[in-house]
Image (cartoon, rainbow, N blue to C red; front, side, top):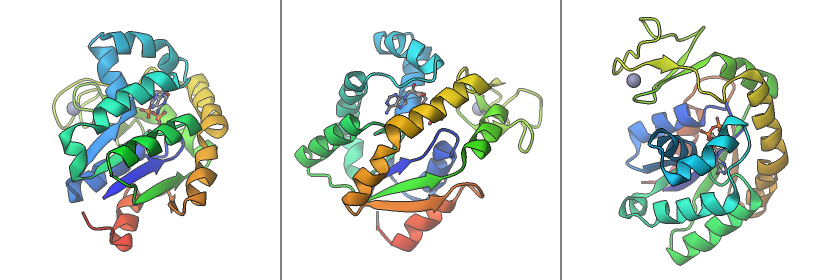
Length: 215
Ligand code: ADP
Ligand code: ZN
């Protein structure tokens, strides 16, 4: 099964991916996670990406495309994958199309997570993340049991640098301008499926189950 998750920041791509991964043996490929890992480790890629990420802007296409060519060529991608946060622009989608053709790995579905801008701002302002294991919390509705300490691994629970309100607004406008054209792009290929993302974080998983894509 080869699936893309598209949606605005805060739609819950990360949480929905976790639910899907618990049921299907796929490679979960999140460009945001790969970039943050590179920033944390101070790699050249991380250094060049950080200023864009902190401003809520997209990292340039050529950097992302190079990074994803490497990632998708790895063996584990052959067992199926879930792309989370990629592609985010039309050039990225076109590059992905070419690459998957070369690798003979056609896409099965593109799931669009739908949620309003207000709900996104509300969610992200309160989002907290474990800096060690990536577990996701909400300061209001799902805080860690002990203040700032991860329930799962004891790591430090913090706010992402780009989860501040001004940056969230900027990430949303980037989404509407640069990523939303992918909706009609994939609709035109007959691959787009709309999934509500304002409620429970398992709507994408349920949708996949009803589509019976197989593993
Ligand atoms: P969110 O979807 O919540 O904005 P991500 O973790 O997917 O968060 O991405 C965080 C940041 O990483 C983005 O704001 C952007 O700067 C960068 N990024 C992630 N994926 C891409 C991509 N496909 N193209 C360009 N930049 C990206
Ligand atoms: Zn943790």
